[in-house]
Amino acid sequence: MLGSFTALVELSITIAGKPNTGTKRAKVQSIYELQCLFRSLKGCTSLRALHLDDAGSNMLDTSELQNLQHVPPSLQFISWGSRDGKKTFRIIRDSASQSAHAVAYEVSPPPHEIVYDWTSKNTFRHLFDD
Image 1 (cartoon, rainbow, N blue to C red):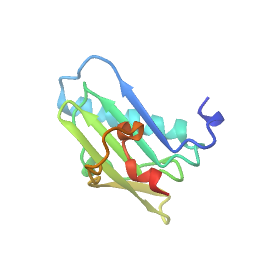
Image 2 (image 1 turned 90 degrees about the horizontal axis):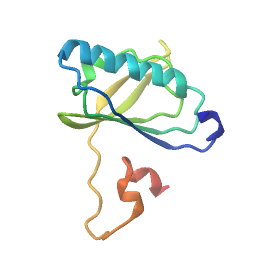
Image 3 (image 1 turned 135 degrees about the vertical axis):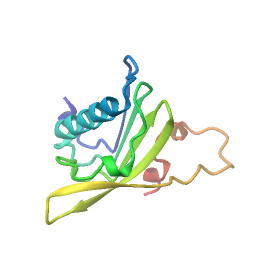
Image 4 (image 1 turned 30 degrees about the vertical axis):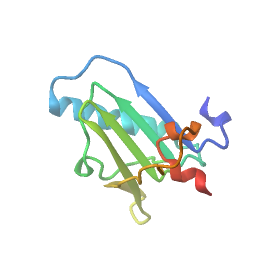
């Protein structure tokens, strides 16, 4: 279905489910779901930003986002929302191993002079500055 969105730049998904109580199991499940999502999105060549919000999950960190496989070719950012808050990662590719990993990334806050702008709900405002 996503193949019909040939110019999709940013995708936001909210996962609604029961909260996981086991920290280790919850993180393993979250990483597995992220890898499955990557496989589903590998044909979305224009996708640059992916935001996942799962209030039942735990926060991921960069040590858990190493050796990522099947990352969509243009994906630059992942934003992960959990019960502990939100963290943004930048994707770094390793052409030799055909894998990628994530590093923490701080997104600049929106300008203060904007009163209301429909893009203020977007995860990555700077992507619309092209």
